[in-house]
Amino acid sequence: MTGAPPPALRLTGLGVRYPGRSRPALEGIDLAVGRGEFFGVAGRNGAGKSTLALVVAGFIPRVVRARVEGEVDVAGRPTRTATLAELIREVGIVFATPANQLSSSKPTVREELAFGLENLGVPREEMDGRIDRALAELGIADLAERLPAALSGGEQQRVAIASILVMGPGILVLDEPTAQLDPAGTEAVAALLHERADAGITVVVAEHKPAVLGRAFGCLVLDAGRQVALDAPGRALGSAVMGQLGGAVPTLVAVAEALGLDPRLGFDPAALAAAIGQRATGAPGAARTPPAGAAGAPTPPAVPWQPVRDQPPVAIEIEGLVHRYPGGVEALRGVDLAIEPGETVAIVGRNGSGKTTLAKHLNGLLAPAEGRVRVGGRDLRGTAVAEAARTVGFVFQDPDDQLFNRSVAREVAFGPSNLRLPAADRDRLVARALESVGLTGESATNPYDLDLSARKLVALASVLAIDPAVLVLDEPTTGQDGPGMARVGALVDAFAAAGRTVIAITHDMEFAARHFRRVVAMREGRVILDGAPEAVFTPGNAAALASTGLALPPAAAVAAALGWAAPVPLDAEGLVARLRD
Image (cartoon, rainbow, N blue to C red; front, side):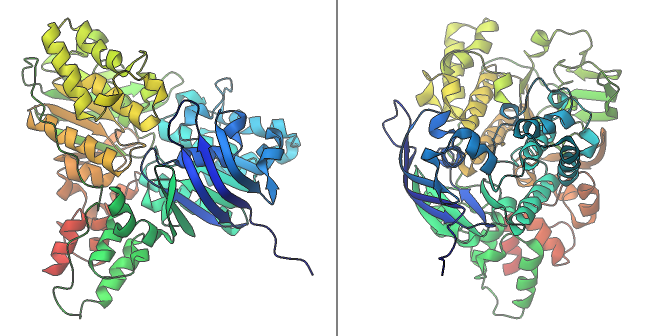
């Protein structure tokens, strides 16, 4: 009689310490994940999620130097005795940054997916079938002949996932695989991972998004490298754990807790609405205030933005804007927008809908094929980017496209130094920008010694230090945990309170609804919705939003499922208050 098969993955007393670090990145982690299980890993940035992923895939200590204690077993075999080539056949890893995954030498997406299969020696006839299935599963068949480097960040992220899925690993490890995806893309990837687990693949995913973690069989929560919870997602991500850590409690988990309902309902608006309906005949006043941390964690103290440069109010006028990329891709198809001085505008839409292309016209990074863009009454056609940047500050989606200095302080000081501001003004702006993003203590650090979320904050600070009249943010919350998102939101509020204009491209509907007074939704290079959040995020617009890869904010989705008329609550607090009434 034989015993039960070993788990697909077992961590026993796992500890990891990086060279030169006084504290371990992981300490005393015990975890067993069975074959065909879908397991989530959560926690604030710096908790050790990425380190765990690298250890499981064998990159630590073989590629990334670190001292490892304890045991990591894959299918009953210790990884310390396996070669990296052997591990690659068993464990596939998807990195948080797709640019780190994709080969710059591959001219098409199809060839990118073929690269790993060629290295595994897969026969050509089998290779084509695998590639076609992966392209279809990730919804990127239309990108097969496109250049990977020319895709949007979200499209590149789907390609990166497909490049690992196509290799057919028995264990799939993913580090924030949906960070740059729109809501529809996130749901599709979450469903695909669940299907892979049902088919016998072991899935371990480090994530912040409830849409992904909520589908997991179990969830491990890390804090400062230690294991603090191992439970079903609804309980592991609830206020008893995440609230105590200063993290974000998912909106609908917070609502379920406030209503005394099963927190496991907090990942399905329809199921939560049904449970609320069943409770409708119960005693009034049963609802309580959502716990601290709901919908984005406690907001850090806002640092008021007191302008140093005397910038006049700036209006933006976009008329008939068309943009065509080399190769004939028409990314913008006649966009008309007028943005008043001091407005806060969130631009939302599916990956590849033209959002970033539109934003890059606001400071001359791209020139119109047709139409025109005026900032402060000046036509940007023919205006040097350096000159436009004095008025419009642009924070890129990928901070590595923006950072180049050897210390955080020098990076942030670069812009105001180029503007030749007086030394006192420059120093005041640099200090205020670093304080605003919470990086004062990292001023001497090399930006590339920081993780992705911190590098994004460095890039943001480097633009804040220019004190622009218009601040353009491309996916500012990507990779941020709850406190990081709250800090970015507080910055948007403070900048707007100073009378400056803020324009953000975002896939986070709650972030858009909470911090912006206007929402512009795009589809296939055109504007399809434009208005206040309460007017855009209504049940009547659900189909239009879905057509561009978007969804109602979770609280609004519950209200829609309850059949409420517009306007509907857009956050947990508003939903619970309405239910109490």
